[in-house]
Image (cartoon, rainbow, N blue to C red; front, top):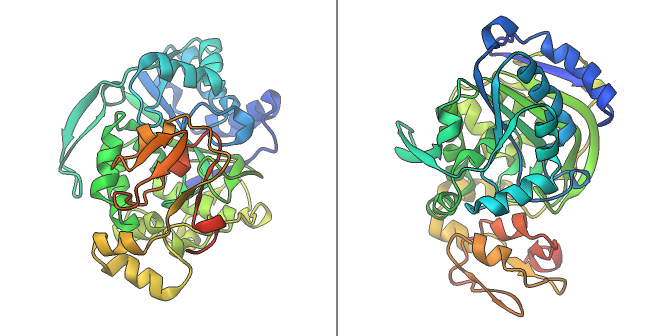
Length: 375
């Protein structure tokens, strides 16, 4: 259905979210769509809808990146749904509100397609690290899945893009269970790869027009990169995105594990189509207090220590004075280590340092390490 080979990644320069400019960029991407094979199929578009942030905050896939794909598929007579399982939420009204806030619901309606607010899951089996788990039913039942992620740094995994975005097909609270049982970044990255292989999305598009650096995936700073990245291979797409962001691969377990599993090749062996990435490459500020430190001894500990000891050595999340006591972190915390008493309070005896609280805090009131530094 898409003419890209497994080892090919399409990189298309696009400087802004201006609709006309994006339409020009997508002309190059649509050249790789085999329309006759796609026509009339059921399609699921899976963006990154972390929470109800407005597009300019760069924590979600920008709606203008999604619109041309939805419109093109709609014109091919496809039955198109767009959805995610944001945060740990299953209440349909809340999901609809998040979809609306991000601007994604508006462009999907404009394209003649539908948003999916269902959190119903279907059990799948066969994963190496997840022998049995649930995936959103509507994703599994679609003929074609198009994964549309955002290029960002990440507090737990170092980077989030194509592979990490598919964690969103896990229904609501089940995500918390996965964090609880896989507190080590390497173990959790193996889980992400299991999910990605099971979904087996047909095409992966990364919104790298404006990404995020620093304390991502939601509290960081928007940073322009000016590209759309497309590939049938999510691991190769992430390799290219990480290269373009100037991030250190050694600090991103998912990238290293994908190579170990033979799912992708090193960047210099990937065929890049459409642009010279040396002319586009930026230097994104990583999440400095992320799980894996730059120190070589810490990398060894991260892979060799038991999860319980490794978790004790990781940096703690701290609540800042700008906490608004909204309760989002309390609801999202996998081990239920947070309680709201005017403001959020963390029970560090329960905390597994998964940083879901920092990831989802709407007030950006949670930092990793005291004052954002080492403990």
